[in-house]
Length: 155
Image (cartoon, rainbow, N blue to C red):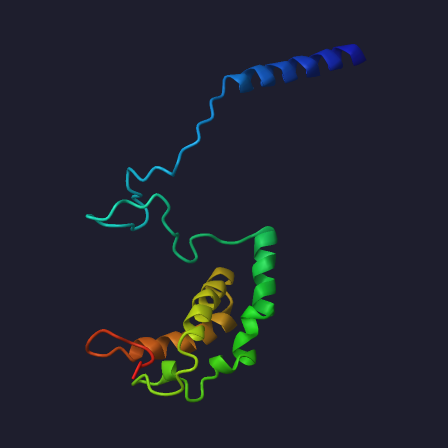
């Protein structure tokens, strides 16, 4: 019986190896861009089609170790940077002013942090982070001027 099991395992392994020999691998210089992705908007003509389109936030729900890592980020430095950084103080911040006036020292750090912070909130469906992100995003959009520009003023 033991001999039979060994032979059966050997034949299965031999079949798998023989089948693998029929497999052809091809290395491409870049992912194919055609046809265009019908599910998500990409580049429009005359621009070339993009082979890798960024998925909308929330299209993927993190699970397992990735969710745990995102939860650690939310509980750590990234999730509480607004409590730590002087650049993310709402008082006198130009991003919260309807005319874009105020302290210009935070004009660059805040949007970079906010992009990742807001995405983190929506990925985790975290009400605290979403509420804090919206506190910054909504006034910035409300400050849009007639020429289309919004946010802090460069004057």
